[in-house]
Image (spheres, rainbow, N blue to C red):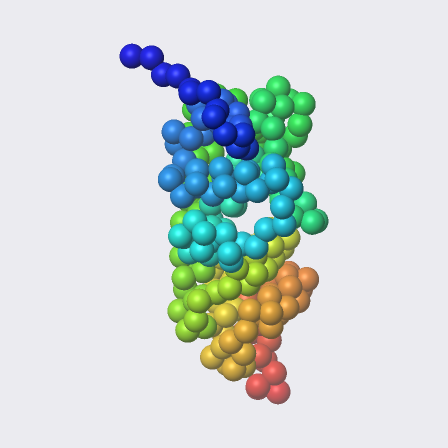
Length: 218
């Protein structure tokens, strides 16, 4: 059996995908992850401004799943974060060592199938942890997170490296004790906590709750 491509009868545009993506990454990625990569890659080649909320509607996936897929490729190094947005990285140049992996990734770029599978397993764990965190936050806020709110939380995690359990704890604590069920307020509080060295739930209990108990007894 032979596969062939018919000649174009109408002049239409196309989106070329690197064979290394098809051979190395497509087989181990989920359907949503592949769908997000190809669609965003098409938009990137067209140099278009993107609206993640609109894209989630066009792809018929939730904002949370869209962000999970986007960060899946960021964690693998195929997409890098820029001040003005995101940039697709040449897979060939990554394999050849011409370009470096996103600085947020500590491990070297996977050069073997075993390395790729290891990175894949790690990314699955990260995505599952993120999904659980965001769903718990949505439960605490009693509303769906907007795409820009998900992005703010992800950006905060990338910058300050606080535990996901602490992020959830902050939303619960500030909602129950302070009456603030607001993403911006919570992120601002988390940023101040990080500056004070509060990175885990244990830190929170010792420094935030402990400080409140001391104040109430004086």
